[in-house]
Length: 560
Image 1 (tube, rainbow, N blue to C red):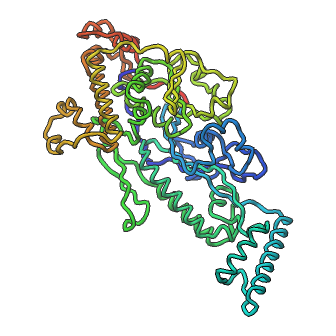
Image 2: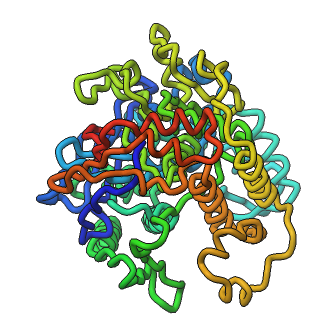
């Protein structure tokens, strides 16, 4: 943990680096229920000179592997019998991080997972039997209609009266006849967007619109009539050169839409905004992309209040302070979006400090040897350095012989339970006044999350107050009920706690710059700092000791 004096990374001129499709090109009906995901399609097809799309991105897009819901063996898998069944997942949105070892540049993957129906292949023998049964069924219905009404002959394609309809339905129920509709199975498919910027909610809108566009064009090509000649089969690589003209035109339209989106430039921080129309202006409003300048809070386009909502104020502070005091923290959940959002929220709330250790919002269980994932020649989960990692619930279930180190604090986000030796160790005592004020502010934010609050204050009064008075009058900020205001409220609560005289108030007065180039290194004068505290608490002593050594404010390289 260190003060955030680090040099700013050069912004990327591209708003979006890549859009890719991940899944199984040719899923098998009788094969393994879970298989390794494949990279099906990439936009643009050529890699950028400054960043090549890593091949292991497929494991982050589908952390539990690529599965098919039609396999009965998957339903009987004991790993999923008591938890969340993947066949019940209609659509899931989550994020993950990719960190380059050499340049230390962090990129974010925004992933939309859904179950895609695929037409099953029929053998020639099965097709002949099906046609024979359909023909016999039509003959039987026609014969029954002739017996009921000799003067009127009905076929399956003409409407019949209510009496004959009920009789034919009874007859249909008594016979075991295959329907002419094609049977379908479902396979997990992902659409992933990779970017340097954390516009998570805005990128989610782009991905959802892209999915709706593809689905609409797919249904317009009548997949039940033309079989496997569909839009999805072309996009996922099952068919390279479709014969149907409608399918080719639909795929070309999708390619053009994606490439136009990829050509969108990134906004300049505090100077420009970018308006992106996903459809013609007369049909919808644009999505606005903008970055704050360096004097404001950094961009956060996700819920900072989610860990507070899941854990409550006291458990939230226990996890946050454990991470702040450089303990090993592992979050576990069956929901990928909970994991990634909570890990990113905990690290973002450290401001004005900066978490310099390993951060992995989602460690895929489908990645072979993930428990032996290396960073600086040390095993991550068994490394002596601190970290905060998000694990899917299937990670430990699929590795029965693997045991987490004893000094790891394991938090189950689904049950709000803590495990490990660190769960029994109390956090060092905080300054009493600051702790009481922080708990009060967090409970107020939590009340706002639950829909409990008072009337918001007048906007004119907000604007008339100075910046310092705005910061000190925190309680009024939590009265607004929208998520953005509550995110701002919890960030201000943490900043006020760090700026208090008994915690880190006046921290910069006790630092000395050792060097600026090529990386800034700052020395912390521990003794002078502790003497300046009016009422030093055990928590402040432990926190200050983490800053005692020389601090290189550039995060250590490592793939995350």
